[in-house]
Image (cartoon, one colour):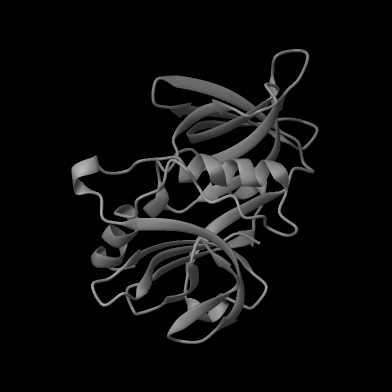
Length: 219
């Protein structure tokens, strides 16, 4: 990724009130993870362009645009160009996690007070720090943690204990072998297909065209 693309990704503004259109086949806790991401403000208010996060399903796609299956708050499609940054979700494993990695984990606090991860996502370097922190979901036993891995402790049963740190806090996540692990990886438009669930960060230009700056494909 060249510097201009990397800066484009970091300049995306994440709304504090994400659109709540449903995603078929996406786990509730993963949706909670995404809501956590969408709740982050990365720039001071004075520096924020009119970027809008759109959660949608791709109906059709070509080299120039994406048409959504349903109109989302008045937006039926977005334009693509060479500067659009795209990340797709790929299967990963616990063995791919190392100290210094930035991860997001949905976890359940069990009776012993320990956090047991139910799914975990590894972020690329360009998204390091996105949504950083720990927050409780609607069910107080469900906790969302976006943090940097400080230590990986392997356990005899095959899982791991991830010691993580975030601004003003630390946590330990118990990740059993069966917990699904995925990674967001930098990609291109050729990997986007009809039927995919996406989070699109876009802005309307002076010409009235809504252009996508960053796309997260989260299937």
